[in-house]
Length: 356
Ligand code: ATP
Image 1 (spheres, rainbow, N blue to C red):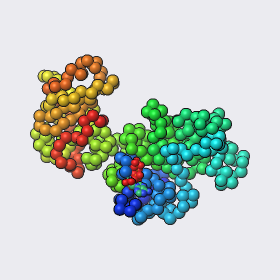
Image 2 (image 1 turned 135 degrees about the vertical axis):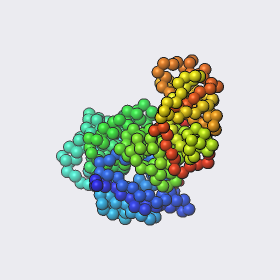
Image 3 (image 1 turned 60 degrees about the vertical axis):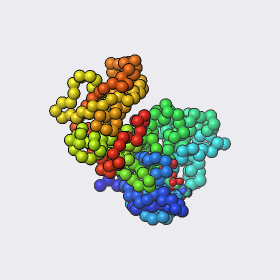
């Protein structure tokens, strides 16, 4: 078994009558890039703060590298936190900001300089020493915050919504960048996000939080392709449930099943239907959303319920697809792409039609 950088055992935190964290067990291995993903209020930030030492647990244990640190102060723990607002000192230069932690620890000046320059190089900000935070872009400020934490060479870096303050394009660039930086420095990164795409893109593994508990821990592919619960299926992607009467009618079995939108083929008119290992469901297109590279079809099934199908626009233009509203179609998919959901909700339609 690899060494565990972080281990949480039976972690609980209540604020008055609010149970923010309701019993969390988790192991994060050394060198992992690990995401805590969940909606607002699901308790992930509180877990991060308990690992950092800014909150103390109501119950449970926090271990770092096998050592119980539950009662230790933040500065006694081998972790550093990068906050969402970066918390840079505006009156200091980039270099002074990065050196600050070492100065507090009374590291000699020459070593301080060298380590600060190393840290700035690792976030690709060499040459920016003399700038002040106000003279930097959002992405550059984010990197300074990262360098300021990396300079301490912590065993674990905690990141609270690290890309939350950046616009979409920069966020996508930084997702790739952050992953590359983590690979280079080899430090365990544990980050909090409510953005499923961010979690799937950057992480080695993801823990999905809901109501103060972890619903599933797995690799991005496991979480997406094999969600353990209906909550995970819906939060990470579009849930697309086949349940109630539709399950026996379409699949020949009882239960609740899910199939991802991009796994569905939309067949028009008398086009080729299901092959030997495929299932199909007939329905009517109730909505068509053209999104450039792909089109989203919302299909009301004859058997009850509704599925969303995502098709790449390989041969078609917006004019072709938008005219399909109201058309009769069949949705076809390979059986290996349908999976059973354990905690079946009441039979019905997926909670969102426009979101995927
Ligand atoms: P977000 O993404 O919005 O930060 P989160 O998943 O990180 O959400 P937490 O911030 O951990 O969730 O909050 C979990 C619950 O605990 C929420 O209901 C929140 O209101 C409550 N909570 C968090 N901190 C405190 C506090 N200091 N005092 C009282 N309640 C708190």
